[in-house]
Length: 190
Image: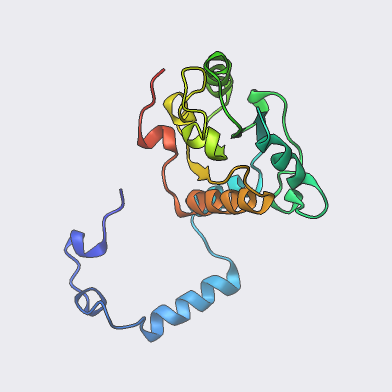
């Protein structure tokens, strides 16, 4: 976790007066950073990770049809650098779980998740993947977050392709903000 400057004991006017806007120097530095493209290594790596996420599909039910449609010309996931769905978990870093996960598929899903290289992200697409949906019985897993760490939940039954695109954008925002992955933030049963 990053500390604020006030936590280090810095007593500047900016820190003591939080409602005051940025000063002239801060505005000029901000304009200079925008003009020259100055950044930190962490921000550059996060930007590169968002522009090169390769999804691995785990389509199990009707949500998979909606997931397949995001590669069409109308939705064009290629603008995010994700046009090629990977069929091998070792080549992918984003797992999109779409549809209901039965108890029999829980093992293979966990195996695919474990084979993915780090950093890895998971999107649970649809009500069934997020919470079991309308299938409240012994044969369907009540939420994929019981076996893998989920970063983004996309609601709907089935969710529209626009909702999945919104989930991908939210995931990109999380990565660029430097938030930890779900598997780093909370443990999952193995």
